[in-house]
Length: 72
Image 1 (tube, rainbow, N blue to C red):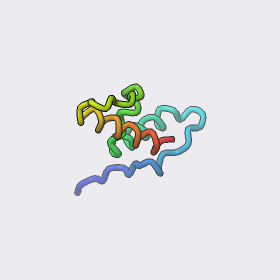
Image 2: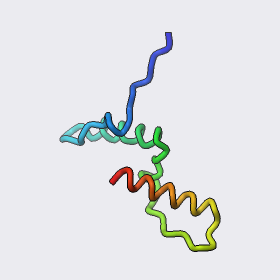
Image 3: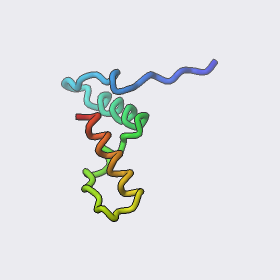
Image 4: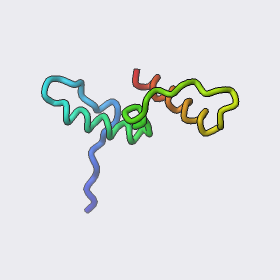
């Protein structure tokens, strides 16, 4: 029998209270990873790309803006 993984998403993360920081941080990292937004914990905010920036730079910036809006 296959054991099911715990269901973790942005709605299942409990509010940080007192000494539960480690559990809260783990849940947050898992949820952000599943949503493909882990870069908000790993990268500094992106600068607005120049008009002649590569498509990759523009895509990363758009992804950062979307993640920032979702998490604020």
